[in-house]
Image 1 (tube, one colour):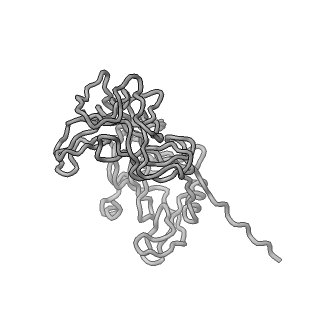
Image 2 (spheres, helix red, strand yellow):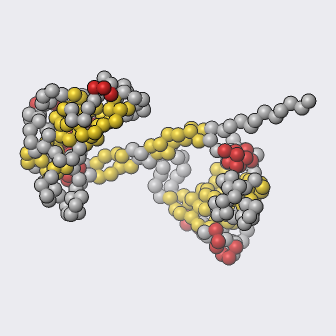
Image 3 (cartoon, rainbow, N blue to C red):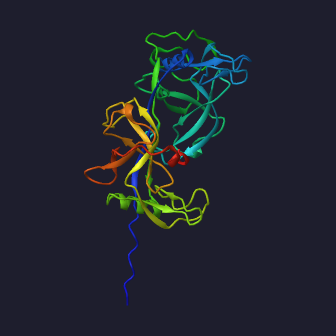
Length: 329
């Protein structure tokens, strides 16, 4: 009797896609966020007289620029809601809460925020709520810590004007106005590469690059995808390619990325490895950035700990003829 082979280990890795960027604020958004810091909620009046909260800088109907700021109340009415029984990290509240659209008194549109309630049975469409202000306010939407159920008007924070009235004109002028914010976009997920990618990663650990050939069109894809994107058939025939290749296109990077210890400027390129019908991307090193060119012949320089090439450097060979790689651009 032969013992059954154990199944291969399923590879998994945590991945984070992060893109924080700094954006400047126009006069409307600047007034809105600065107002939140001061315990004031501002909206903007459109050409047809509606009051939008949060405010926009352009009328959604006519597309004309709008600047007429008004102050609305910090109490309002729930127009719709959904219960969040398992809050995620960095959400407004650590305990279960409702995501609610709240139309503040004096506004004609609703603002989305967290509603602190003991359970879904305590939340209803049409219920009255009020702003719960954050203890420390910096000029961000998080200055509204959340909404909470309310029977009457909210207490004004730090001596701010009485809340709960209809929209009243506001000049939008504050001392030390907020003029810019950092918008953080982040996605955390666990990646499992599957059969084709697992074989590709295993080969990289041996300083080899392996692709897969389509049985129909016979193109070799690197990295392999498990199926031909053109023919839609499974690919199982593995082919070792490279190690050298040709630069097909490239870009010069002039902005230093966070947590990336590479001096700018540097070049990132699409590289068609010999024997492959799909270009992969990699950094070009060992040559001044302004001497990188299409057709440059390059080879991998592997990281000391293996795993994948750190960058690609010129091989010293003559440049490839354009006709040899034009289909891979």
